[in-house]
Image 1 (cartoon, helix red, strand yellow):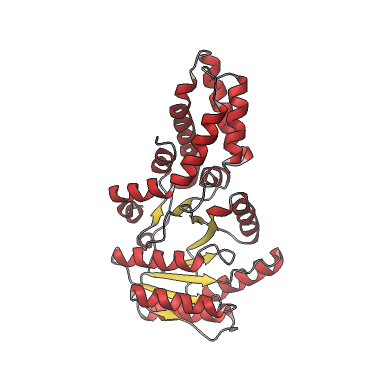
Image 2 (image 1 turned 30 degrees about the vertical axis):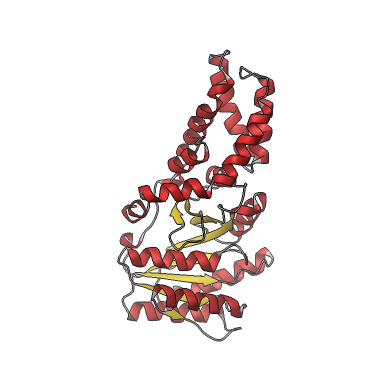
Length: 317
């Protein structure tokens, strides 16, 4: 965890605030309209709040949990004013997210004998390759040696894009020809990493939305071949989701978690969307930690997901 804590610093708070601006503005616009002429939190206000949360992509299940928590508070204080709603929402959502077990144990390179292997999965277009590049930069900034593996061999652009990131960050990339066996690339990558005594290996995988069985078979094969080199690899399977797709991100998470053992999530593209509420729902509903969020295009705009800081920025007026 110390690696993650070091990354999150005060100057990142400004980026987080800025990245969530659209989501926050959209949420408070809806909330403001729903509270016109209302002074106390009654059933009508709670019904409106439920609609605001659902249309802000928080997700139905998580919304119902939040409303239930607020209802319990209202039952103790029937004269609760609508002016208090923002602080109550902040407290209850923070409380809800802190109850999930997902943030307790986040793996990092220091927890493992070298190298620490991360297999990155997700559909095309979610920002998977960019996330790998930014993650490689952050690990390198922390003093770790990193090797990239281009196992998305179905798109020439994916290999080229990863090469650009490898050159930019100044780290080696293991690749083969387009159309090569992804498992073969993963094998070569791990062998190179062991030879070079690398600390971290980041492996890009194909982002095709195939049916669940094919996806499962392909990812299982990549894992099995990696284990010939490092028996307990991969140490982390990170699923990258595009936050700007809102509820589609939930569906992708369901598909991938059904197909393979996902152990960490990254939610990207939050800066260009009003659907940032999706992070609250994903963090609550999947028993998998949201490890990073993308709040901008800069190389440092991939941030460690801090539940408290996220909620604070989302509800800051």
